[in-house]
Image (cartoon, rainbow, N blue to C red; front, side, top):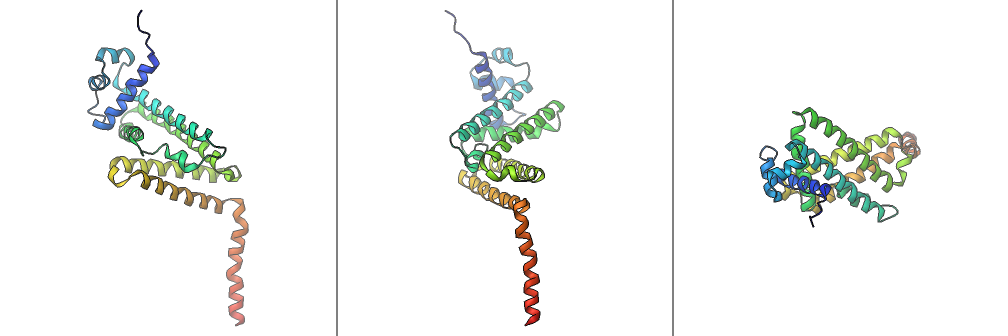
Length: 225
């Protein structure tokens, strides 16, 4: 009886191997021959599923996005109010699997400007990541819905920008960025961003008024003395 092949699973396997190859050798040194050899397949087998190396890269990008979303979903479903730090850590290179994903991702960034198709793919991926992170923020911060839309937008962009920068730094200099340092810096940034958002929201207005009136009161007291 012939063996039943799960073609979707095989495509994912090839895409995952491509992630490892790119993370290890870079885009220029990644070829279909090398991907096939690392996967234990012939080049003809790989060509059966993908026409070009770029097609494999796009499949790998989609696979990484799906894997991150699955991890985020599992984390979110584990608690009524998920811990935001734990959620967002799923996108950082804190273990071998996530390091490979992030190394592949940062290598991909270097290819975007020179290729119109990859630029379009990158724009779509960016929107998807923004959607995922926005969901994390909404699930983990009860006050999220009460903030003005422009505040939420700035918070979201600040979080995504920081994670992208932290990811690139950790991939480029892994010895300088052990997992605990990554999560420590992310925790600090989240606290600072949340504090800024609270001070920018409607609930901060009374605080501003008190702060504005305090110097005047102190000034009158000084004059009276």
